[in-house]
Length: 269
Length: 357
Image (tube, rainbow over all chains, first blue to last red):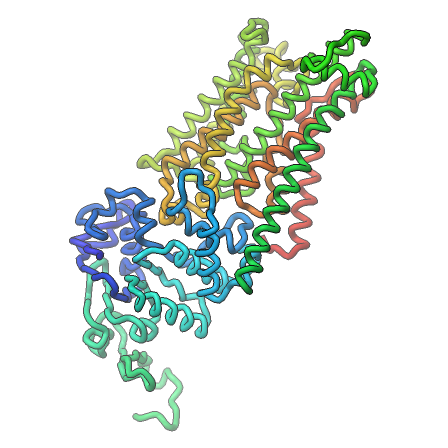
């Protein structure tokens, strides 16, 4: 579905991605992890065709994204940005309807089906009650759910999420990822840039770690999510143990200075 | 919330738009007729309607004062049509500029198009070309149009980086061009004391002495601008979220942004070339409409245009009759005097509704 070959990409004189290569098959749910400044967001911008590749190539569904129209890309890939600023009072439903843009005809009118799809997206994200509220008047977390709903309304095969749940509370994080996992089961391909290691290990079958603009590790979650790899990539001590319910690997950070963390009486020493 | 309820609410807001549309169209037509009753020569209301009907060829003018027909149809109505058109185009251009620059405080004059027009007009007045005629009117509007378009293309040339137009760079380039041209206008004024008053009057914006030929002159630019902005009204919604999101949602950002910019600038250039610089209409009217119906650009552009027309028709009536003794005020003074305090009120309402910024 997605083929990235020796990708170099950046802004101005800084080159952020320095030779990134990987492939994602249709129906995969991949977490993209890595320290700050490793190039995760840049990679998503390049994939969605916003940032042109300097060299190397990105092929989606067999075609080079830099040579395709934005409309074609928007029918194939939907992006959920990290955060959005709204200069004007749009209704939440209007924002979700904007996801229908790549499917509209030249006159740009919304059909009853477009409205149906948008309302379904609001229902799936459990924010139907916000439909007529202005986006500037809902909470940051609710606004982020509107962006997720807009991406669903785009009805694309591929979903690109850039820390889409970073500003959400725990319940909403789980709610969004349950929904994304469901979309994945129905055949969608997902690439999720994430900061939350444990959330990634809980939901993604495969993880790609970026560091300094290159792939530092790439593999099935149970293969790459271990003490040594994580500690090396994040340059801090990390221990992995099994999730008490699902058995997925979960990371635990170890304080650097002895005695810096709170020592529990029941903890092992 | 059940699906039916959301759809019903959508229909409700559509009905609200249609109601407002009908009200504003009726209001605009009534305003045109009512505004024609104001003026130095006293024409009774029935005389105004008869004269309009006669002017449109709907009835013959047998049995009524022919002076009325000349005054009402040729002098007043042409001026009313022109002020209505200018109000409409300024409000639409304001909404479009605000959308592509992602700035609710932008107006048709933010990127220097108006200063370009003022410079063109000042230069024509300074060179003594005001007496020359073109299309049966002074040469000044043509010079103003040329100045406006020259300023626009300078701004585009300055703001274009890697074939991309960035809103922030555009605003900066606009400020640079406008400041430079304003200095040149001051230079012209100090070089030629005699032309100062006509330059000042022109820069403040006025419909004095304008007639049907001015309408004919400006109409093609206004029509082309309205068509361009109208065609891309859906894209304006997406562009107002920022270039990156618009691109990810499938908009051909660079091309569409350029076309909307040219459309909105044609609107501004057409308006400014026949009326001078009239402030606040393009800023206040879209703001007001957005507060009533939200930011979706299709209804916003249509209702802003109609409300802008009504606002400027009445501002011009005030400019004509407010001073005793038949002296006229520049209409730009009226819109600034009304628009400034009104805009403060709008901001206060917004604050009271709880918006933080």
